[in-house]
Length: 173
Image (cartoon, rainbow, N blue to C red):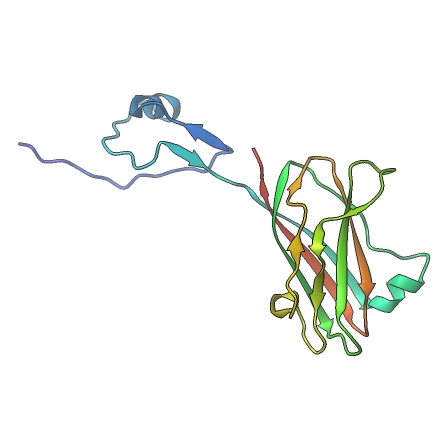
């Protein structure tokens, strides 16, 4: 009698990164045993898998600069990533100057380290994170290839402690 029945769709998550659709029929054949799709609002769907690399250091940051036995660990990119943002936070705010943090990348363990920043990440005196920094960080490198090594470096601790560095990432196709 011309009435249409609309029911709630159930979509299950899969590891599909890119989907270019040439016709509505190809969606039905690829994902469902039987399907009828009458409206499609996008022809290309992209899901960027989010990721994060984190470093933590408990205690005085001056210790990490003066001790030969301790240092921030290196991390290896497990996929091709795009760096979206960096966030630096401390539980003990810098008291004698700005905390400056750098992250160096190396293509191989024996390569020369190069900063991912053109303007390094900072936490201002009396502050607890980089989100309100007077001088915001600027990323010079945003594209990490799988296997790239990352090595954080505390350049000026200035009385701060209990550091967390987070790189927010999206997977590149």
